[in-house]
Image 1 (cartoon, rainbow, N blue to C red):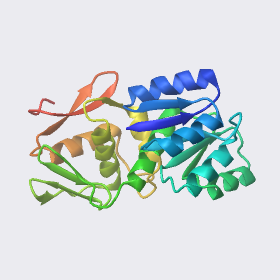
Image 2: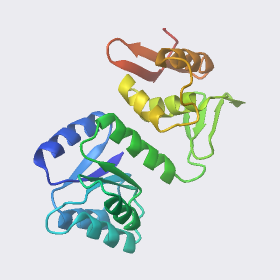
Image 3: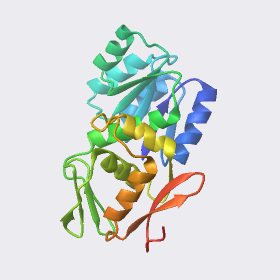
Image 4: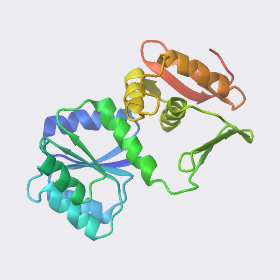
Amino acid sequence: MTLLLAEDDATLTDALTSELSRAGFTVEHAANGAVAEYLLLKQTFDVAILDLGLPMVDGLTVLRRARAARRSVPVLVLTALDSLDDRVAGLNAGADDYLTKPFDFPELEARLHALMRRMRPAGAGQEVGHLLFDSAARRATVRGEPLELSPREWMLLELLLSQRDRVVTKDQIVSAWALERSEAGAPGSIEVYIHRLRRKLENSGLVIRTVRGLGYLLEAGAADM
């Protein structure tokens, strides 16, 4: 997953680059708007984080020029400006999402994955083991049999698949669920949903391992709960 990080704050850039790399992103950094514009026009990214207060060329101008050039990369605007007018201006310029500073990294990561899911073309499913998972069509099968998943189970599986062979923390799961309102207030802890999902994946060739003190790991192999 390639990501453009257009941010001029060196401390924030270092922290975000570290966290994003740990989450599986390959990060390209732009410290000013001129470099950000050049990279958006010349390179292909899966997603971009764009600060509005960039030096040389401001973020809104960068975004407008990228959209005028028909660059369709999903863009999350990151800014300290949180008034309604600022949010409207960012969205009208072509932003796909808007997050104000300060923020928690799990929410940022969840929003990035949501943006990439939204932009994924229809039919762009993935096959892992005996699981066929098509996010765009909202369809999953195991050995050809439909997999019935609740909204929370679906988002949990999608998150685990996106981070396959890497640990997913409970904070990441909670942040992903925060974007799903249809099960708001639904009973059951993360452990309950993990247990349910494990049972549904029994014949898939995939297992969800508990990594004590860290979170959960989806990988291929024989079940070992």
